[in-house]
Image 1 (cartoon, rainbow, N blue to C red):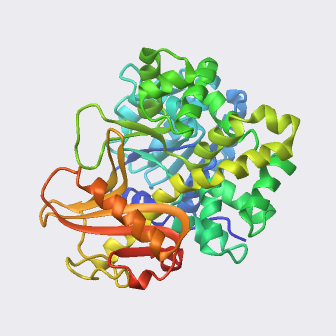
Image 2 (cartoon, one colour):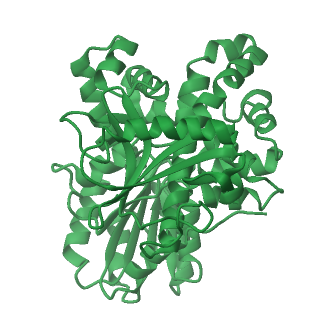
Length: 466
């Protein structure tokens, strides 16, 4: 049974801070279900620590919980009548201790003065202390305001603000294979629907099957475990303005990538759309803004959702919620009809992850050749999407020093040799519009490519990814 998986890099960052002789205050935040609590609990194993889930209940009961935790690391059970008592005891302990406050933002409802008290004791004692405080927050906007709002007591106190991200495709695939045999193409479908969110992957492993469509039906329609998940997570995050945020997220998930397109889709004024986009980007970190990887004209930025699950949920579930309520089979049919288009867009991120992995493996410029068997013809230092007006290229990787460039088209399709060559001809026509003098290389990534060994350009498919 898979319960905690990987997170090697995240654990190493926490370990480095723990080994430091000084005290530290780590803010571990991120979307719900991403595994923040599991990471913290894995990290504090075999270390002297105190863990408190900040449940919304009377302060007196939380202090009782802490009395029990303190008893485990002291020779007696202390009496805590206030937060002053707790901090007094903690900062008198010389031995290094980890103190974890899970769902830290809940103190705002329990005792709004807690943050000022924490700030007071931290400022007075952290220089001579060796303790490590880890505060966990699932409401990204709120937790960032607590530590980044310049009028907040804890502004500037955090040693590290760390956004715990969902798994990439490779780790998601490996996680699911802990439950059942799963081929790579099907694993990609799981990833496009559920993202790399550990909790959703765990549900898919426990209640699903190796078939992504059947697992979708099980989790979204039969049990409805995930049917309202997006609503449940983001409604509390956004508060009373959630409908406007949701409309904008639906627009982005539907392929509307510029403020004007989003405004036209939603009917929300462009100035208001820009305000919400700024908050979604900087405060909530739910969307990302990308510029063409090789600069074109000014103000060409586009907006995308950061999270595959939210992308899927807003595109299919939220948009068609009424249909799912009245006729679940019709709702599932709407997903089935448009899923390949969505998978095609989502496949670009997996293709990018794949190229980065090969790029790291190759390491040396010039290795691999152009046959698609041995790797890449050069080592790129930057990679991303490119567009200019109506022309788009899925991925471009390039190296400014060597002036080499890789133009890459990504297709969620099974292609014949002839179809692959036609796609490549169109890609070369588009590549002419990219500024600069480059040594050009070309690449195609698809589900399956027939006779790819006979092509005179790089060609990868899912068989290569395996």
